[in-house]
Amino acid sequence: MSASADLTASALPTLNAMAMSFNVYPMVLKYFENRIEELGSPSILAYILTLIIVHGILLIQATLTLVLKLSCRAKSGKLWLWRKQHLLDQEVPYLIPNGHFIIEPLQILGCIFFELSTLVAYIAIRWPDVARKLPALHATCLFWIAVSCVPGFIGFWWSGWSAFYALFLTPTHASRSSHGQIARTYHNPILMNVVCMGVPVLISLFFIIIGIFLTAKHEKAGEIYATFSIQLRHLSETWKPNDPNTVDNNRRLSALLQRLLSEAGEILHTLQCMAIGWAITAITIVTVWLRWPNKFMTRTNLMTPFSTLLSKFYVGTAISVGKVTQRTLKMATGRATLITYASKDTKSVSQLDSSGLDDGLELRVESNHFQVSQPSHPSGIKKSVSALSLRRNLYLLRASCGLMVIYLGFNFCISIIIATKAPILMMS
Image: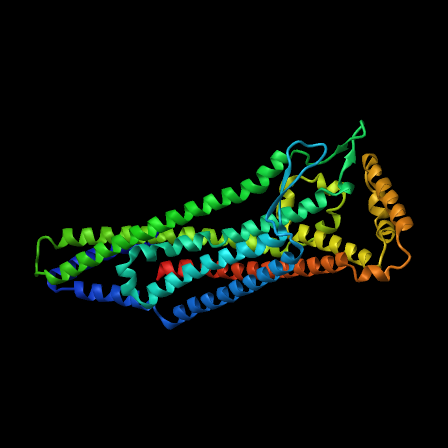
């Protein structure tokens, strides 16, 4: 911004000298009008139109996926967004979001925000007269851009919590205290509920404030540009040679231009920082697979500080629940037994500390009980309603994960484009 201010200040003496001899204001006015018209170039309009089409496809895809889930769940009568999970050793229930129905509605909301921002930008560039007549509508473009990624983050967060609770509330993730009672690593439901619901609220408030800030800055920049254009047009019409007020008029004109550049610089800098932040979030969630999902079901990883789990939260919990669902499906269809998976996990159980031996014993007892009580004709189970429900849940889980990875990858590309194009736009 200092470079732009220095350039404007250095051009002021030249403007004063030229304005004394002939009327340069019509040329300056024409120059600014041409630069505004360049924003409506076919390449920029084509880019915005591409964003509209792609987000429309994502919107249709999320809507179809949601309709499919609703139709499947409506048959069983299990339609819920939140539920309370009461434990015997806790008075306060855990508030558990439904990971099957959280992602798609929030993605639909995020796509609608993206569509609003791109449509407003397209209208403002394609038909600038409409933007001049409705400056408030044009100013809301930046607000929709700021809040468009919030639903996606909330969807990842709550889906991760849903999958996390599916593993956290299993008996094998509980240990026995000295009095024989169940003791859990994260035992405070109030804290867990506050973290589960509080983080999305804070993120939403933060980006709503950023959106309001950008909208106010955009509206203020529009007012400054309107004042600048009016004064420049007035000077071009009332110019007189060797006018003693020329220097003062040019100084006021330069001050308006510096204010305009300052407001535009703050807007673009805020957009750039926001885009970089969302790009880092998207690429972290997509690429951080690591070995954490395989170790998630052991006590040692549950004792890891909670902050280290957040970067791997959605993908890790989704993979873990997918594996658990796949195992359960194999056992329900008779293709595997619980004792098979218990023998595979012997090494991981032996690596636990002495306080975790009860979990391994509990797992073996459950396995032996399952082996004794297993029916001799597993073929009848293959066609059971439970197996079909598990298979459907596994497919829906994979579809949701794939859909959100695509959504995150596309948002990452958009964030990179905004972050790289903002300085170029500012220099132009």
